[in-house]
Length: 92
Image 1 (cartoon, rainbow, N blue to C red):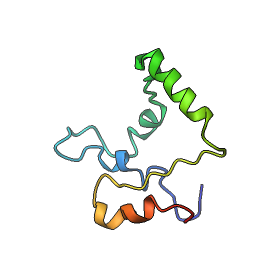
Image 2: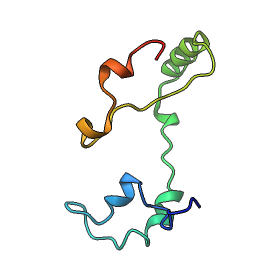
Image 3: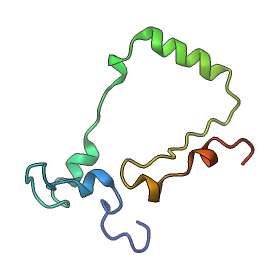
Image 4: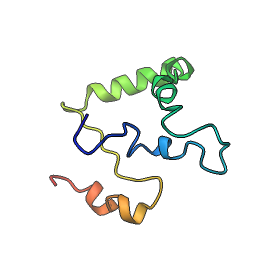
């Protein structure tokens, strides 16, 4: 664990929302954390096969390495997000 990070849930947005209204009280963050980490959401069976093929064809043409960058925060976007002009700048 990184020095200064004595709580593994620290800095994790879903963890901060545990038992925070309007969600129900389900215990302190430390208690449900392991269950949260072990939860798996299986969405692939819900994606139509044609959509998967479409994405595979598109990705086949993209130069490697492929890097995904999440530039928009869900909350406090003006503080946490890259401005659009920087996020889409080429050669930056």
